[in-house]
Length: 205
Image (tube, rainbow, N blue to C red; front, side, top):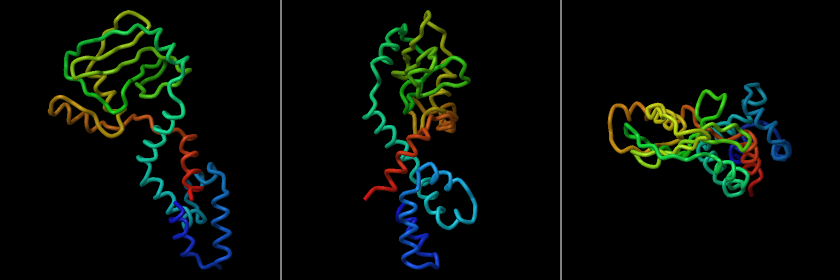
């Protein structure tokens, strides 16, 4: 990102002193303001922040992965959430069609939500939890009795929630169709996490 700023400043017909001042101003700029500037298309933005926007876009996938790794290392599953999961009734269901194993692990069905999520906050109202453990079996957590599971729908949800890939036991037109759904509903990095990562990139030595 610093390289992109330097390249943009090098093209401006201003003194070295003004370029140095511009670098310091960008470094001290609040991250939220910087992100807003990268989203705008005004004249002031075009020259200076175009390189930054391209740099962030090019590295977004890696930034998301690194952000989640950092979050997991800093904030493991809290004890209250573990206790909440322990109150669920857990069952193993055998599938009537081959299951895919996504790259996100569990899928959460939340009350009032129209889709499954791969990330569930501590305060969200979890209805059920689904975890495929093989191409034939799925672990289901629920507060009620053993539910019926639409395995075709679960495969679609797992494909849409996965970011990069899923694993399957066979190759078929159905699996190819699921492959085309990858990432459609993946839970990416939050705005707060993105601001922290950009701040670290700007201030790195």
